Length: 136
Image (cartoon, rainbow, N blue to C red; front, side):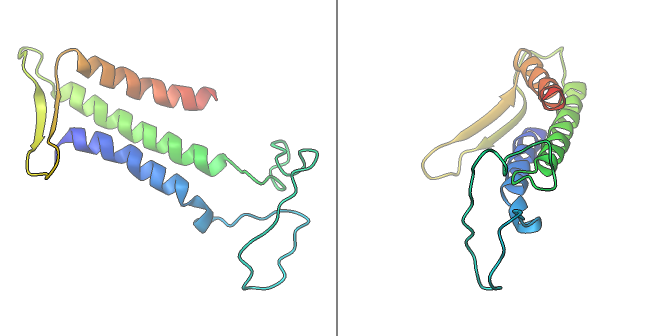
């Protein structure tokens, strides 16, 4: 497996973990009592911003600390992989490198590669993402 595929798969794994976070950490809403173990739906009242209060994390409906941790770890892993790609890149060659061709797909072909200009864009993107997450 090429490093470019790893660079593409890491954010997909992060998206999957973020989208399935409620199965690991159940949402508790203050003032709403569960009537039975078989109840699957809960009606929420968004009046006066009580539920969406970000200052009170115990009663917050959207506790984003898990999302931020997963997103930050994902972007750091992506940065490490892109730095490895940058270190392994041969600047004396002006051809595409780290080429992956998948021509056996039925309705489209995939051709991935990095050239001398796009290596800087890959590196720039993976450096900016953790900075953007920390500054948010």
